[in-house]
Length: 251
Image (cartoon, rainbow, N blue to C red):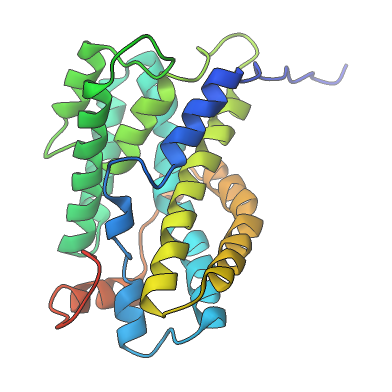
């Protein structure tokens, strides 16, 4: 008989809204203040128009975000759900050690700390309420909780607990939230630094949205041995951005 793969438990409306909230540019973690090397790419003449910006960001999605942060979030969510601190420390260390410049490392550390602080300051009984114990465990990660690990903690508390039917679809929904939040921030960064109009920014965002499902499929299938953060030109531009004379963004 063929093997029947059970469907995952569906997300509740409240959980979907929490994932939308985590993807919002209004989330007070400072994501809007980073261009992740795009500003330096504009300064160097590599990105000069809408077409260049869209192509640059689509490449970054597939070559950097999918193979690194998305893959880490996909592994960190179930690690938080089962309380596997050894695994979480391993993933957090990997993120810290594979950031290729100091400003990229400082970005993931600052955003991770800010998200932990936001979670700590929440009140009420919303789905995203995180226990003090888990927040303390996340805050205690060394040298500091990184953005993908802190995001996974927030997600783990708004997804249904893994059951006999699994939660693969719920994790996919969480990765959609993470990727869309990144894409919207980067499209806004392109509008400011290229510069571009709002319509061009929306077309760039559409280009990224079209590619996000494939990027998530790739991230979900990556074993630890194939996860990587190797983008030499992005690293060079980020290093140059650290001393760029005039700039709008922190990275």
